[in-house]
Image (cartoon, rainbow, N blue to C red; front, top):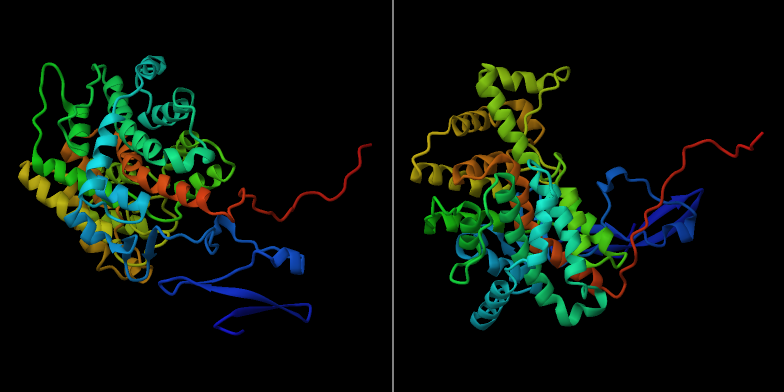
Length: 425
């Protein structure tokens, strides 16, 4: 192997050279795009755990060191100093907005915050109690019929309008879906409110109980959306890139991302954490007992909210959310026993060699559900909030993918393991 240029693969005594690709942060990959053509072989990598599906300039993660950056900027700095719509602009355009760009982006978000009035009536067709994520996926798909001029050919002209319409109306639809689920009338967006303040008002305002907007609550909502805004090639983002590679319209593409996120192994993890903590509280277990149960291979109990496919260190987002959770519960004077259980669980797990050796640290989902509960969100809205935050990242990846002149429709290979030739009798 020439570490600077090529990797050598030997098959049946014959050598083949494949280019080594090195990313801007030193990540290394072997370009095997010509492997089958040159050797007749393919690689087998279930779940694509060791496969790089693309080159991207959007998000960098170093799971060993617990690093997350959007467009090169540490997540800690963005969470502390920026608003969600600034971060959305950063992901979409590659740079933070200047004063004029911020103003124009805000104007577009406001102009496109209203849902097409005919779409509002579609909510009436869903049964009471429908999960908001299923409603959101369906409503997003329907947008292509109300706003049909969205395809790769109009990308250069309409991306700002399309992106802002999605980011803004998704927020409106999410609030409408929640209001529908509890039998309350929808609350329309207000032009005098910022993005997150508008969302909170649409969620919690009612004719008989006006919602009071609190600047610190708005600030923490911005924080949560920023932390979820992108996370490179996760399941839902890969879904967006895969569906988008077939030149499916952007609304249907994002709808597929929402569907992928709805799974309990992806976006539903923070709901699973709340259920686990509630089980500990109601089941009469001590934290020590639950930890021992989780360590027992013959016991189905799992420690939810610990470990991550990429992070082998403390998830940097988890640190930020933990601090925000403690601060907001104190501000609201909420005594949540689930937080007490969570903090004890974290403390004892991180001092247990079983979890330390396996590099199982709290991830972003461990504390976020507790914070959402404190803000007043029901459990079935947790994944919707995740999707709302992730939307700019999905659109950014779609934009990057369709703008790449070398992009092709995604079409993996397989190794067939079925019956060999079998003739009909």
